[in-house]
Length: 248
Length: 297
Image (cartoon, rainbow over all chains, first blue to last red; front, side):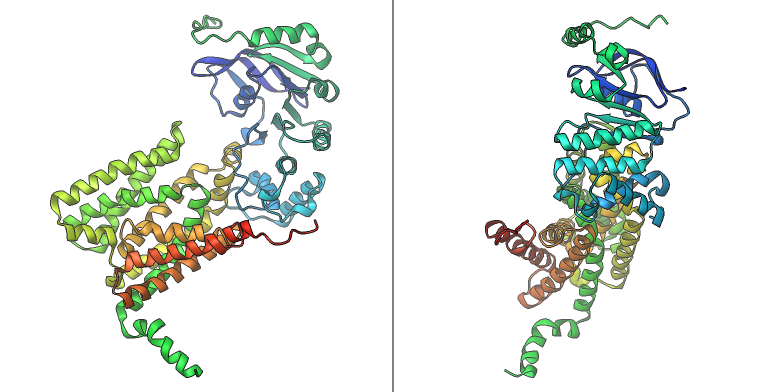
């Protein structure tokens, strides 16, 4: 099977400090990958970089036959104003942005698609409720429904389960598994190693530098986890300039 | 009291000023035009947490209007153009700084409006006298002529049309800007287009209410509407209605009490807001302290 993302020695960072340092590798089309690592390991940064929200300090991200608009991205702390007076169905309909754009009409099939997505996340009776009236878990379901509608080939989720209960997590994991079945490529940032072990075939362990990337059982080996922990603690405000890759 | 007698006593109070005087009729139509445009624009400003930004913009318009006033006298087209140009420069510069640098929108607007306001005060004090300044600051809705009416109606039409076109990207930019960026949905276009709408509405309002009061008819009805309605379309419609009612009652107050019309209208809008804060069913103080019996589920 082909590759959908290729990372060529890519470095992302803030104020010239690397948060993801010289990461090379490829994500296969259709892979379901958990991105794991300690806090500050660069997991969120990597997703932002793939999404094109951050410019690489060095190296590059290659999207293979994939347009940015075909990526669905759920940030960890979405800048969503949840007090805004908009209802659940309209929020889900926005997933059709590629089809309807800023000015296009909402046609009957688009509306049907949004309703089907709401059905799939179990929120059909909430269609006309304002988003302000939802709980955190219900709102996360709405965002997943919007991604269902988006019909994206690559789906990036940044800690989608961090504030939701077990039942919601199970339901959302089922949706992710379905995406995997449909051949979509999915990358999920997670902290829960047990959950990663049982639900994800592959994992990428980051500690700013890549520690391990491959089948989940290999990546989660105790030696890797210990190494990741040690590496993530080595932060130096006045680190010298990195010369790696400069000669290449 | 018979119905006729009741009507007879209310007629001079509520209707006669408009029947007798053309300037009152024009002022009333002017208020209607302002209300139609300012209502939805004010609601969106409020939902974007840019209420104070509208105030900043109204100050930013001052130097442009002042320059035109000193140059062309009390000419509405000249002052409108001057105010529009100054407002547009400040809005686009501040909006650009907010989009392209880490400085937040409120801070970048504060920076640019202060520069603009200082320049305006300097210009007016160097060349004009205090009476001129009062004209620019407090407006002259009772002197609204046909040209200004056409301008206000034009602005109202432009605002409603513009909002209808920009509606979807503008709303998404308000509540989920990250998503709009991720689908490449033209948030910048909506943002700048909206700032232009804010400026033209303030310019239309300053002729009638003065540069500093114009924002009153934009923000007070919007803030009041929040206590009565929940959906966006209802908020916008209600804000327009409340703005027009404030204009009507404010004009009557100004007529019967021989008060300046601009502050009278804005103060009336303030009373409407105050009442809404207390008795509005959506989070008003009364509903907060006396919520009534809770439901079973």
